[in-house]
Length: 464
Image (cartoon, rainbow, N blue to C red; front, side, top):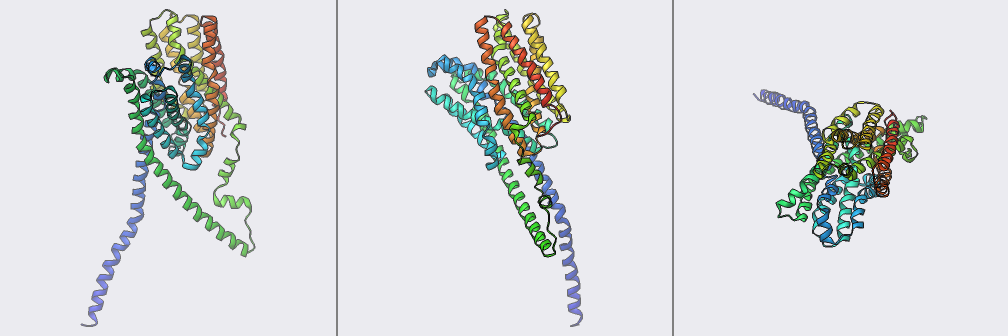
């Protein structure tokens, strides 16, 4: 009895206790993989939501002001010169502030910088309608534009990092949202003001709500980015510690690793190669910057002058407005489709040339007979305007890694926006000097030809 009792107790207890532990050990990796998959799915959905919300806020700062500019000028005592300056401030701000985005991204991470940018947009939009002086109004507009500028540069980077296998589709998605936000702000600001008793300040400030909605998703994405960076840093530290131990062992056995082997062991050879790249010396980067700048210049000409061209041809103001709306609305579906197709191709030169052909045909029609087939000219120019999502897709695909895409995006957009400033101004000066549109449109045709050539070189299968 005494001998049997320990055997009986130990046998069943030990056996029953060991089995659950073994099962738990077997289930643990499976559960970890399942949890990791759920977390990755949640993060990707969060990133999609954040991208779309950010894109919706990239243009209302500019396009919501135009419909109520007359009321804003009267309330603030804004001169015509200052009002004209407002049309060029966005491009200059995008160029100057966007150039700082790479340094900010290296310090705070792309997600964190876009989060701060969205907060700046919300603050600027919320406060600027309720100030009483022009300088403060301009300052708050500049704050919102600064937030947009860093987001402009870094959204292609976020796409590259978060969706490396779906660059074209995700670029198309947020380009579509960008066009939708721009069109909605232009169309809805006046009705919003009417809903608040005709108060232009309320109609303008209402867009701060949309910007505020974008802040929490980017805050969550920034936390996830910091968590991933900390995990990666810990992994690299452990890897480096293992390498150092192996290196010391090699020294003890008389075998010393070569510097190239050491870099390969650390896995940072590509990163070193990437940091050695001087983006400003790359022909691909300059082709992208020229293509970006020339397509922006064409877009600003269409936004600023196309309705006037149609009105000078004898069409009514209402019809001219509808024709301009066609060029904007076409960008909503075409931006998504075009970027999705471009992202599947290694070479996008053919698409750039095709868009240039649409633009040349549209401008030629407007030059020869603007009132003969205005709807056709508007459709052709609307298709040509879709060069914007194409160049964003190109930027994300031309960089070898995320760090290079940050520098490439900052360079192409900063230089490109600066190049885009003179075009609309020269068109207006020629129009004022000649009293007609043949001279200005001839200039735009030359710019479109240069855009087509730059797009051909930017679209080739080359990487920086």
